[in-house]
Each structure stands twice: as structure tokens, then as C-alpha cells.
Image 1 (cartoon, rainbow, N blue to C red):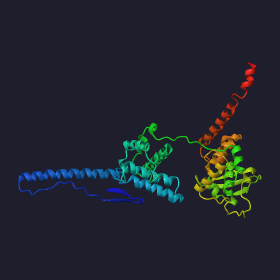
Image 2 (cartoon, one colour; image 1 turned 90 degrees about the vertical axis):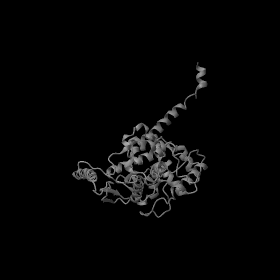
Image 3 (cartoon, helix red, strand yellow; image 1 turned 180 degrees about the horizontal axis):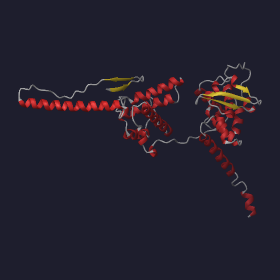
Image 4 (cartoon, rainbow, N blue to C red; image 1 turned 120 degrees about the vertical axis):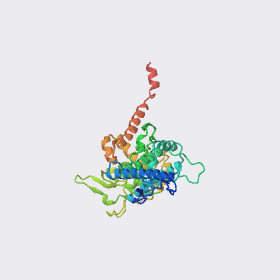
Length: 373
């Protein structure tokens, strides 16, 4: 018998028939009779071996699977499961579908997951080095995917194969045999942020949408993500037992609840003149892409030569707090980071700013020093 794993997740066990292509011939001569006896002995030998294999499987001593699972379908099912769990076609859904797209380009539509070995993985790593970005359909010259995208796709392949091990489709993850040195690595990206002076300039500069302007400035001090600020309600802002104003909200990205104290300065950027019912959203923002386009125009009008997106407000909040002397552990909690190493990226930015600030002293007293010599 063999097992088949369907895309729906259902497992079916069916009987299979093996044709040995051994035939008995009419025993018209003694030689024919001897030949038939030899044929029967061979057939019985094969039968005995098959029985031993079956008994070994049933005893649990050895499990030999004959699962026919298409890797492309398996990865696609993981992507669809990610969407059904979150109802959002973002992050994991898109990345797994992108992985499926690149696996097809690499090896075609049908890839038996049981046939994936070290050579397959090594070849896929080499493929990712020159793979084109499938998001630019219709263009003759598509850009090569970034180093970070290659790392993300490889990580998702490892996740898929790890799930295949858990589902007992394969015995080991072939990626475990790959030298870590050749696995795709991430490339540190530039964290754009605003200085206090630049924030002041933005405050004094008109923006096409006042609600976008206020929400961005609010987040420059509070540091929550776009999806979070878009969904916070007036009822999420309360006063604690010590008289502090706090924001209690659910982090959409990591699905955890956070409580943040809000400064009086941040409160100034909450919209006014609204009903402020507990169930009403504080900011009625458009989609992220539209918001970022308006922010970019606003920054251009303010003559700030930086690429401004809404996420820049989160980077700004991190560097601002560290610059003001807030301990890194506290900043990590304020931003809702699960690992302090994520916050340390901002600490390096602040340290570099301190070095640059000291270096600004160089040469300012050259003329006076020359007179002393």
C-alpha cells in the first residue's frame, strides 16, 4: 500500500498491484516444466520479500513512506493557510506564493518533495543569486531580487520542509545538510529617521491631509506601526491609577497587547473636533500606499531630502528616545520588540550620531591655534 497527500490535507491509503512480468508456459516438454518451476520460485521469492517489508512496517521498526507530494502544491497550501488564519494577503501569504513562483522557475511545476536533496538546495541558492523579481510582470528587464528577499525566500523554503518533516512526509530537512556559510544572508538596510529639527520643520509645513500629518507626528513620539495607528480607537486611550495617559492596543503584526504611556506632547497631535466615542477610530487613514505618497509630497514641500514613509515615524521614535537618554531596554519595550537585538540597531545609529557630533569640532579653532604656535 502507499499513501497520497492531497492538497486539502486529506491522506488516502490505497492498494497497489505489482506486475512482475513473469509468465508460465505450457508444459509440453520437460524443459518447459523446469522453466515454470524456476519462474514460480522467483515469484514466491519476491512475494516473501514484500510480506517481510509489510510486516516490518506494521511492527513500527521501520517506516518507509511512498508519499507523492508536489512541493509547489505544498508551499501554496501553506500560503493559503496563512491567509485563512489572518485574512490578510500580506507577509507570509505573499512570501510563500513568491517562493512557489521561484520554485517553478527553478525546477518546473512538478517537484516531488521526497526527491529534494542537498544538490537541489544548493542549486536553488545559486538560482536566487540571479533570480528576477516577479512583481514586475510585463517588463522586458526585470530587476534582480534583493539580497534580503533571497534570504526571506530561502527561510520560507526551510519552513516548508520543516513542516514536511513534522507531517512525516520526509524524514529529514535537506537544508540541515547545507553549510551555513553559503546560505543567503540578510543585508543591513538603512533606517531612515527624522531629527528634532526636521520634525519642527514638518510641523510648520502644510500637508495635504491634516489627519495624516497628525497621525505621523503622533507616531514619531509613540512609535506604533501604521496598521496599529489606523485601528486604534478613542476607547484605547485611558488614564491609569497614577493619572498617566496610556494607550492600550493590540499589535497586529505579532498579535499581542501592549500598553504605552503617552506624553503630553504626543497628545497634542490627536485630532480635535470629533465625537470621540469609545468605538470610533481616532484616525481615519487611507491605505498605506496612498498615505506614503502624501507623506513624500509633504517632506518635499518641507525641503527635507529624505525618503519619508509612515514607518519612518517608528524609526524616529526609537532614535529620539535613545538620544534623550532612555535606556535601551525601555525603548525595546516601548516599541514592542520581541528581541533587544532589534532595538540595538537604533542604538548604533545614535552612537554614530554622537561620533559625528564630536567630529564637528575638528578644525573650528585652527586659526586661533596657529597663533599660539
